Amino acid sequence: MKTSLVIHIASLGQDGALHARWCLGDAMGQVRHQGIWAEGQDLSLPVGAGIERAIILLPSSDVFVRQVRVPAKSDREARMAIPFVIEDYLATPLEETHISVGDKIDAQGTRWVFAAAQALVARWQDFIQSLNIKPVYVLPDAMALEGHGGDLTVVAHENFALYQAPAADLFAYVARIAAAKAGEGASDADETAGEAPALNAPLCGGFELSLGDMALPSLGAALAPKRLLISHDINPALIVPGPEPVALKRMANPDLAASAARLPSSVLGLMPKVFGAALSARIDWAGLAKPWILAASLSVLAGISYLGFSVFEGFYYQSRTQAYRTASEQAFRTAFPDVNNIRNLRAQLRQRVGTGSAQSGAQFLDLAARLQTLLSDIDTITIQSLRFDGQSGDLRVSALYSDFSDFERLRAAAEGQDLVLVDGGARQSSAGISGDFTVRRR
Image (tube, rainbow, N blue to C red; front, side, top):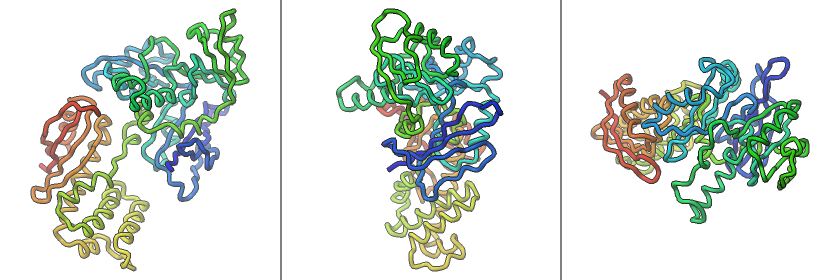
């Protein structure tokens, strides 16, 4: 079962130090291991945990969250416009604010936007930079609450109150998508996180419990909830003080980290990439390599055996770390169990699969590694398949774009890598914009 590493960063304490609770949770919300991680310490995780992704929960009291609808022609235009759309609502000057914009969640250009003080984001990034896990998803902790259909959810968490309006309920969003796919709900066009609310409407956030007497009445006045879901530490009379009837339901204080582990990556991927696209992207090399085996016309056994090593060798030459060297040796031993002593991986590989195959493999690795470098800075392109033509030495790529301009951005970036990208055409599909292109050395 998929295991997620969830790191729940707390708001800065009185001593100004960062600390976080971490846990390993599965898709059912079961916590297997947990602990505390403090700034300046190494994160010690259980050996063989099988972690497939990391989820960083940020303190909602420090993050501005909104949905913004910008019908721009491209993602670049939207990202340029959004800071000026939200500027009047920020607590810090624009030049001191780190603004992150997510992918489009509907055809009208609605996007999630997170904003926080630049200095604080830099502290968070330094804190997690030692993680050797991809992909990394980020969201404010209040978005890990389950609203269960309430108009307003308010819970106490440590010394803070976290609140969530329906538009920020990601679990309800997952349920709507599942219903739509089963034919029970809306069409594909309606598979969004809901209509983008007015910009000044509170979606989710947090504040110190000591400020509840002032903050809760304002929250109730802004949302006028008829269905209220609160923990036992929250006084409902502060939220709805008048005689208006309200359906009230109490809930236990939730385990936000365990809840976050249950969220699917498809939904977490819509969230803004606060710490950059490189941490959020991961190419499925094993899946992408299958078409290359066929295209290269290698024998089935030799091709698969060589490819198993090539995947890890590509990673090794990208990162030059001992971890990938060890993985390469393990893959080689798996492919060739009769080998007892590994002295020179590349020489032994050529001996096993033949000179021609190794040469083609080197060309494939070179082009694939260069392509990965390009994509690390462009988070709007998703690779679907790679096919290597052994005769021409070209790498043929099928990908999904978020906008027709994405390929031009990639082609411009390729010039600095001495690569030539030849457009093979693009078309609108149900999954997005599907495009094909060829990568070759200049």
